[in-house]
Length: 517
Length: 76
Image 1: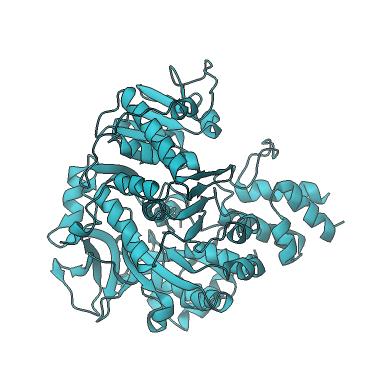
Image 2: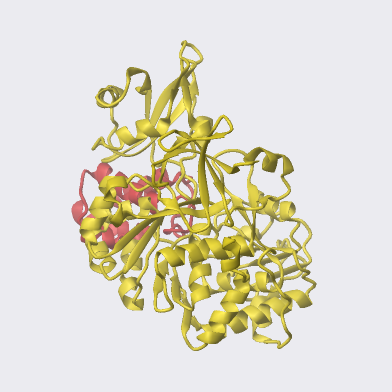
């Protein structure tokens, strides 16, 4: 039923918006700007060149670009040609690059010239078509027989018509970094992408007059959904490569008249702590902020609100497999600041335990159904059987809902630590430790208790607030005021940084692999 | 004197080899130098030199060279 509200492919929405507002600015990056007519022309020209080079509907096209106009051009050109867009993370290893090319059986590969040195000497599968933006040195070290110049392909500007792309057609395969195991390709249709994007646009009341400044990685759905939404509405965006230096990014809010600046809570924490004055000065010009991934700590939300009192603050939850499943406008729900929100239009969230849907207040696995949910993992039928049930897609996240359907995350199922038969959620301990002034960030992990009788023992890996070590005794004393005795860490280790996925989830397996406790 | 120490801290924080040149090491040029890595670097330098950067100085730090320059104001 809800699907009928969005009967278009992502590419047809873009071309409609481009036609309606051809002279309006569409995108900026660190090099320049394009209006809708120019962007649509680039997309169409490259799409037709790919078709001429042999691209058939459903063919996968892998590409490696930083956040840029070229990135968006390639992404939309592939989908407009009926192909399947496979964006690669900018810091992808040679091993994973090869894996993704082989797993998707991609015959087409496009890349940004800044990645040329990374590609040299790689043992890559045979590809039918390779293009880079700018001339590439076809030297002996090149892993490719020939590299076409993408800019020349775009400049040719052909007038043939593009194939019809339907909402149910596959649009993308995105590889999840995941917290464990091998990378998995998540297959997403145009409909998945359109609805996940337009839901956010609707809730955040985005119009063609909005302008977003984004440093989010556009290889992830959080950032991508915004590109999809803004370019469907005829709104403006500026893409910057990263937010490592907020002092260079924040002034752009004023320069381009941005009304939105999405990011993960950790990024806002860093900006509040280290670049507070700049955040206040420029951030106050925004209309809204959307955060995603790990829930924002209530005290951090309050701090952000006090710095930007007139800016609407939203938080959303989703996975690559079901992007933007819930959303909450925190300002309107200050009594449930730890919630990640209620389901977005058309989506349904269940809490499932022992194969039964649970009533409000009960904890269980978060299971999602609705038009945003992926059709499944690419070429992984056994995995698909494991994660899909009659209830929907099983996220592996644990949570509970209140009477109004607001979701509260309480941890990951496989992260649960078993201490002498007692189940311990590491997130509960982390929440306590984050209140220690000496600790900036922390990950709690269970390790097999080889010598004792605990079954598993609890270790806390912390990032010190001032660089100095924090004694285990101090950590245990602090925890003992808030937690049961069996939940107290028996080991504490200082680390420089908590390993996290791009979406902000703690990678506990990396700590388990790196340390022997 | 402080320049060498800053370079050593950069290598430690980003786990770089001693013989790797820092010439091309800039924010975003290596996976380790992301937003959190940047904060870790600033924090490690403050601790090592027992100094505290002002917000203006933090805003100035955008490369190994600018970091050395800011540190040199605290540690002649």
